Image (tube, rainbow, N blue to C red):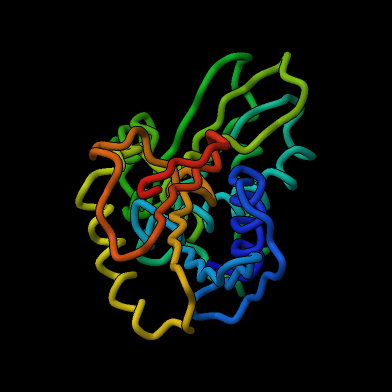
Length: 251
């Protein structure tokens, strides 16, 4: 988690959990925060839960890149639309080439989707075969399947025309599947964090806040385990940003 995310999480937590008065709040690093009340010192450790680190990183890159293309494409297409762009997991688009490739993608989309009719959807996917040198029969067949030679790092592009929509927007999906918050996921978090308890600065109590946020890769459906739970931490919480609520796993 970044420093900004930690500040966001601790502020959101205090906004939902208000049954104490804080005399002092420090940000020492280990644990992430130390809260002093009128009677005790409480160490608060934060952790973010995501479907996977790779998914989080890739989805963030895809959203940012799609935003960049969107800003350019709105000036090239004469209608409102939604767009999502998928990048290849193994390469994506490097920061050094992002500006040039986003321009290339915007120009490609302007030509590819210009004649799309209102409320119609179109998608294209990259193919390694060089279509310019393919025999006409093969080329026509691949083009009819929605296959194109897309710019470097681009896996697929999806665009939907909406004439009556107020503005064009990024409809990028961050994850195909939203899982349940399982007991295994919880145990993995607790095992990793409880080992570090011994190295924390001395406190009267230690609390753990599990943050479900930072995009849909941090969003889980329901909770698949019984509450309350057992933990070495004195209190354990789940802060769910999407629902704006706080689940107390260990009171």
